[in-house]
Length: 139
Image (cartoon, rainbow, N blue to C red; front, side, top):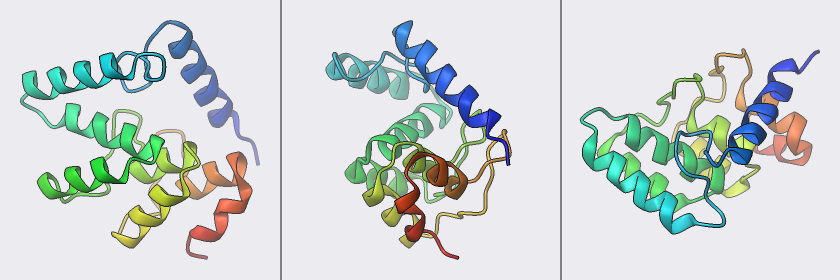
């Protein structure tokens, strides 16, 4: 089973980080997290659509930020929302290897069978990235 999509994902993320962008379309968190959060907040205020809040959900899942995930679910109960890559919060939690976020999302009815635009599920990403977290997913 080939994982060309995952290799491409990591190349895309690495390229974006080197260029000072996150894969969610903003500044790279880490060295300047405050700048990223300020930019995300400004995007959320300026956009009428749910894309900014969706980006925040995906980033929260990637980083294991359960508080932000809960906040998103209060205003948008669709836990299976997808971004432009077709990835759900559960897929981002798998990519970020966040066992807490994976467990929380699954407990709140995240659908582990949903695939991204590359045809991969969260479980497939976790099998490749951190195989011991597969046990969190239903059989």
